[in-house]
Image (cartoon, rainbow, N blue to C red; front, top):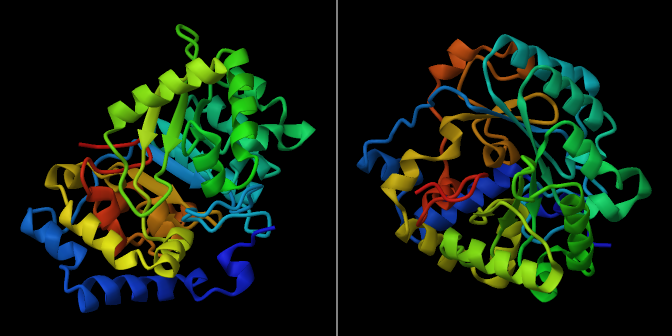
Length: 349
């Protein structure tokens, strides 16, 4: 079984080393402008937040898959997991602040033993719950087979990873058999109403490119996915999110090992879009790590770039202090501002 970078002792498992690689290649070798210089040119430095609309919570790095592009370096060998105590601190922060949406991610968030309890408690607070599901977890074990019904019961919005509408490209990125298992899971979600017109049950898909290139236009990709999945498998869904792979963790390792790193970074920098930069997700999102640490986004979380605020842990959540913080930027941020932009909700421009 493929192991995580951490398990194999890869240097890129160390966030400080990743940041060094990003700095050296972009600034020292390619002589491209540091990201904050680019933001200053367009009047967006320092980048400041708006009112938080999303609390994105990583409930653990454990996953049943080991995907080649994973910025979390998640996998079965990762044991970092959010405790119920930390979950309760998240609930306390939600109860005291008007943040309408909670975005649960991982790893495979469903593998956290307290996942269902957490969803129930968030729902009881009247917040919208969004779960980032890799699909294969639903069919991985009998104890997960009822997840579609559980999601339906709590009105959870499901955001599912599916690299492509064919087996070849999907399995190359995510592992043998992943496409077939994903199709089975999508059919199970459709069967309880997800993605069906008028059901009120939202099923969105996520597309990540399988190589060192940016995604094509999101609207065109969505049409292709909808036509192919309906024709070949009878599957329906609501929207498709096209997300650019950021040079973090396993995707950074792939870029370096394949000799594509310099070319990929040049593409991102050249495609910098001020309009996309204005709408980056870190402005209205606060990211919570499995241990309760606070970050501007999930990518900063994986690079151990904590928020620049006195409020750095969920136990000390202070909305007023967080509202005054400058958002922490680094070279990987070019991935969110290239072309049409990229966020956990797809393109932004």
